[in-house]
Length: 386
Image (cartoon, rainbow, N blue to C red; front, side, top):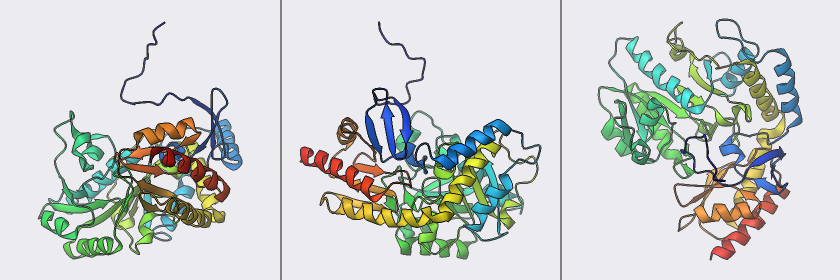
């Protein structure tokens, strides 16, 4: 009998159905074990069946899953405090909660524009970067500097200009009287795990100070401990005016956030923006567990095992190693889609981005022994490919 799917065909799904997870391992319908080096594309930060997270989610499900933002929502204030204190410092920022990275970036774009409009300034253009990725809603897609993702959905929203990543002169050329902000990923994830140069970020930041622009960072993939620091921008010694985050914040429970300095955040006045599901108690409990784990030693663990993983990949002597912490890429000289498929057959989960980059985003709880096992399998695959 011919299989009919009731799902839209927008995902090129691989023919594996995972039904269970434990730690950094996934298991399919046949019980086959896989080492997960992708964590749901950087989402399952605490891995699978984490006892503290599971307990908190179950407990909260029995109490209250959702209550509208017309009322005070349990645990919102506590998680917002964690986000602000680990980024701007105590009482120096405010948080808007939503459900995803794309929603967080929509909020970021809207807040930037409203900040300047409220001051009577007609500044609305945002400079982003080629090969960037900010989401698939119209605002976040328009901010994304990848024309192939725009195809079929034109016209994009106006007000976005795309500079060359790590090229300060290309940014300067795009600044005009309409420019409001610069939005950047300090490590481009979907674009190929491309880290920003330290001097470039510092020059970019200084440029925004000189020109009266807002400096915004997309921390959807780089945030919440992924790079070995709470936030990716902390590797560069700067503090942005506002940033977005999501992915690993809820370790599998959908949650996104916009974090902005007080003087900017105050422009989200009542009725100016909102989210029905954003900041629900279940998501807030999950986010709190993630941050409690980061604070109690997981952040240092990520920095240590991230360096170990990078060293192990370097020892393979193949391709170019990129990234920070547990956000790493191995750039090869040929397309890597087939390598991903071979990895699945051998019980290893990772993906290919920018056609030639193997991307590794394992759960933050991965150990050195598990990295050893994974790299052994990867080495075997690459040997077969050579």
